[in-house]
Amino acid sequence: MPGNQKADPNLETTTYGLFSTCERLMRASIVNRGIEYIFFLTSRKGKGRWLTGFYRLGWYCKHSKGDFALAGSEQRFVFPSLGREDLPAELGEVVFSRFRASKRLNTDQTKLLLDLVSEREDVTGNYLQEIDRLERFNLRHTGFRHWGSVDPFDWNEAEDLLKVQTPLLAASSSSSTNNWKCQECKAVIFNRALLRRCPNCRKIGTLREIRRRRSSGKKGSR
Ligand SMILES: [Zn+2]
Image (cartoon, rainbow, N blue to C red; front, side):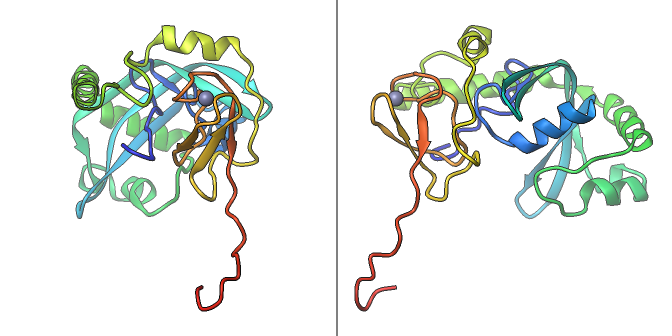
C-alpha cells in the first residue's frame, strides 16, 4: 500500500518488527513482560473488528535499546475469523471494545481465547498464498513485489537485518510528515512507519525523519 508498507507483522517469516519499526513500544513491552502469545485483530469496513489468529512467540532479537524483533515458534490464522458473538460475553467485551494498537489479556483470558481459535480451521497457508498473489500482482504492475524489492520477504532478506545493529535513530517510529530522508542515497521516502532498510538503495539504518516546517507566515494563508 503506498505510504503504508505493511511488512509487519510478517507472516512470511512469522516475525514482528524485523523489517520495520511498527509498534516498537508494544514489542518492548512483550519482551520485558515475557508475553508468549500475540493475537491479531482486523477491521472490516462497517462490520467491526474480527480476531484472525495468533503468534506463539519463541525468540526475540534486539535491534537496539528498547527496539526488539520478535519471532514466533507457531502461527495460526483461522477461518472463519472470530467475531464478538463467538466469544463469551465477558471475553468478547475485553477483546472487542475499542482500544488503540494493543492491550493485554490475563492468563485465563489468553487460555480461553487460544482454545476458541484452535477449534477453527487453520488457513495460514491461504494467507501466505494471498500475500504472494498480491505481491506478484504488484511486481507485474510496478516492477516490484514490495517497495524497492523484487524478492519476497524471507529469511535471506532478514539475515542482513539481524547482522546489523540498527540504532534507534528517530525518537518515534512515526514521522510528523510521513517523510524520511536517506542519508546514503538522499532519496525521500514516504511511509508512515520508519523502515529499517531504505527502499531505494537498500542500505540499513539510513532513514531520518523529515520534520514539518514551521509555517512560513505567508499573509492570508493559514
Ligand atoms: Zn537510500
